[in-house]
Length: 261
Image (tube, rainbow, N blue to C red):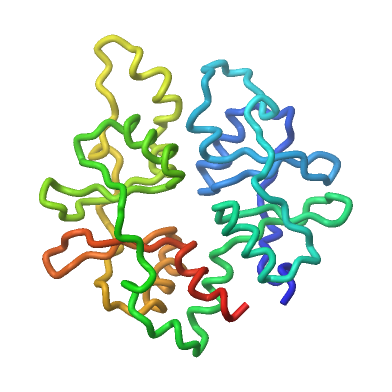
């Protein structure tokens, strides 16, 4: 199978000479994880959500070229589906730019498109319990924790979202990079903590309390369906007392589908 079937071609792009504030607005408003930087129809880099969240300058004239980076991987249009997914899993990313042989930008290959394809298929893995695929060593945060501290955890572990739990381990909410961006909390690592008398933004101020939760024996296909229908990247797994026992993300689900690619 060729990757073009799973490539989203209608995606926003930006130029290296555009303002970084424009990139921030596009990423925030479209809920993007990466924004391709394209000039003369060719890919020259990307701006990621983390690029925006960790901008070290408050200058309003900062340009995209000042914050853009090389993609962790670039996929060619003639790649097989399996090769593309293997490249992305190796790079630990959910979205990757797709280009032609001469680097003309085509679109973004998204792991969620693989999930959309396979959760409705009659494949054995769909009936297996999510406990077989979830991660149990979950990095969490508390509702009273500064968002700056939570963002540091995201950067350290390369996670885009963390569950918020109580002292007894009950799931209270979830906070993602997108939540931080929507709340206008960009540059919090540099500015808010240096301001005298500034009250740091807390998790409880911006966390999402409408959390998708499943039980360990929930079939994988139900988790995949939640991801597709709710457009979310992770689902928390709880026991009968609503205590966190694991988490499963898009990467975990796609790994389960690898043998069918």
